[in-house]
Length: 264
Length: 167
Image (cartoon, rainbow over all chains, first blue to last red; front, top):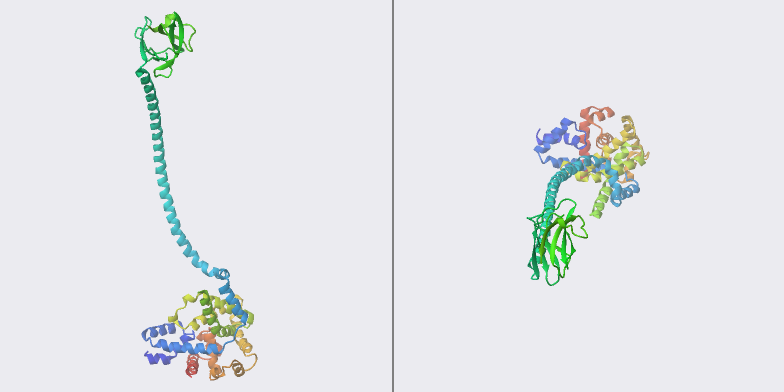
């Protein structure tokens, strides 16, 4: 159809009033696309119909407008709830999609953080174990260092008089050293070279003062390491001896268990 | 922004509520129900305003379609039958004209010149199609005229309206 034929066909009028059949509607749309100036024609038809509709106006009660203004502009929440059923369809699809991606991201982060946690937790434990071992070692070293420096202090003291107690017939290889402080009378003993003590027994130091044996104290050997130990002080002494006694010591020396001795 | 929206809405309402109300009245013989539908229609129009596409037709045509569809949906959901829709359409005439003849009715609204020239049979096809959403076949059946007559009568009626518009 030419443009003029189409205009006089009356199809635009049917289209504008909404009663064009599907085929007629299709034809109108094709012609509108082909001849843009037909849009003006259609617009005039619609305007005349609109004008006619306006001429038929029946004004509604004033309360309708009031209700609408209240519903649409003064109470947004009410408007939301009224429209909720319409919106919910969209929400059903839109919001889960949005949250799904968030949830996926959160889940990935969670898994990643769990893996990191696990690995760091293992590392942390290993590090703590290693630290404990190192601290123990350090404590042991410090202890032995301390003991050694204590030993050394005794040995290097300028007042220290070394006395060697040689082995008796009972223990020819045994040997003990005494460091006797000439200024204070303090007695230190180095039991390193005494034989191993049998169970339930202990070495006891004796000082011979005016021909009588006086106990100089028990020699500590149970710790395993024999360090220089401080004994009872002797201001004046004729001789030193060490006997093997039952644990805790004896009031008088068991003479046949004398291991080492030295005369001053 | 909010107040700007409100004044735009008020303009729309003041301009078109009477025409849309008349359309609903033509379909439903119940003033209270008609005004409820009108209110609902304006809410729908306002909330869907962003979906109006000016390139597809005039704003009023779009608003009219929303209003008419809502009215027809309401009639169906309220248990109205097609028969009663036609009856309602006829009884609305008596409601709007307040039992006075057509001329007097238009006199009272002050638009006699606009529609006096439109013959009753021309007015019928426009009302049934444009306001009430009948199809060509339904109009042909209801008025007892051939389909071709519906088409030519529609074209003639609209050309009368277009002359009024230009005058």
